[in-house]
Image 1 (cartoon, rainbow, N blue to C red):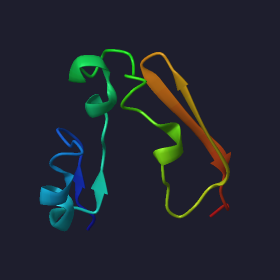
Image 2 (image 1 turned 60 degrees about the horizontal axis):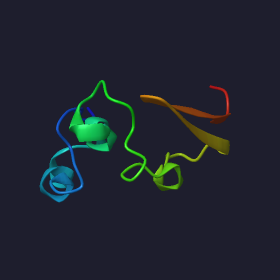
Image 3 (image 1 turned 60 degrees about the vertical axis):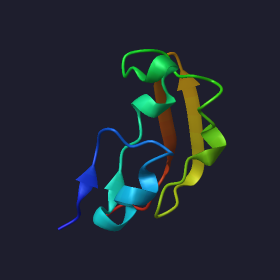
Length: 77
């Protein structure tokens, strides 16, 4: 069963948790002042750094206010 860590991950502590989980949600680290409900901090967030596996054809990452939308095409089931 996959293990997911969905809170508190930053670029400073990711290496410590890497061996213990399969999926990491990194959110508030990229927000202004590290607060989850603030807008994205443009100096910390780089849309080009987003990686999705397996890859999604035509991947588009759009930043808007406090959120990010990810679009693309994947094979059906």
